[in-house]
Every structure is written in C-alpha cells, then in structure tokens.
Image (cartoon, rainbow, N blue to C red):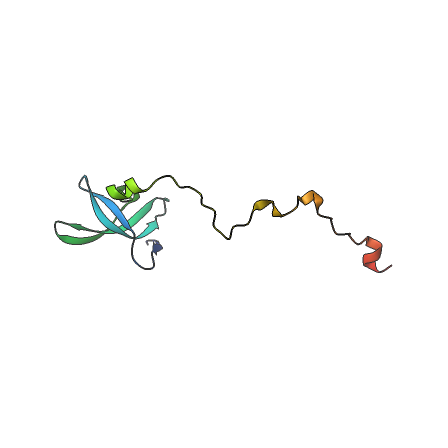
Length: 113
C-alpha cells in the first residue's frame, strides 16, 4: 500500500526557472512541488528538450532561478529608501513616559462596595 502525497501548485502562470538536464541548464517553468515521506522536496517542471515540451518530476537540487538579463543587472542598483509625500514624521507622538496612564478601579469599586 502506498501513501498519498499531496502536491502543491501555483495559481496563474507558473514562474520561470532553470532546470538541470543532462548537465545543461534549460529554461523552464515550475508547475508544482511535493514533499515525500523522508522530507525531501521534488518539483514538477516543464521545459523544451530537443524541440519537444516535457513535463517531469525532478529533485529540488536540479532547479534554480533564472539568471537576470544583462541589461537588467546593469540598471538595478542598490535599493534607496525614498520617503513618500504621505509619510508622517516619526516624532509626532509623545514618548510613552509622557502619556498619563488610566486610573485602575480598585477591587472594592469593582465589586460595588
């Protein structure tokens, strides 16, 4: 008797990935993934090999994110925070020590005595 293995997949278009096949990284798509009883992850991918589209399960180690295009890498610099017009200064609130604490009702007041 074999155990059922749950498979996860994406809604919408599958994300692009690169798949290692016969020692060569090929462009492909990640269709889904599953974990086996031992805890390892297998991924379902689709790619074109020899002009034919193939779909297969493979090890997660045979998968990587695609390399960025050369022009994308040149235009992408370090992220610089840019305050928006609607951002408020953080010093508009008084320190917590300056805010009066509400008076707690004593036990006698709470019981009604």
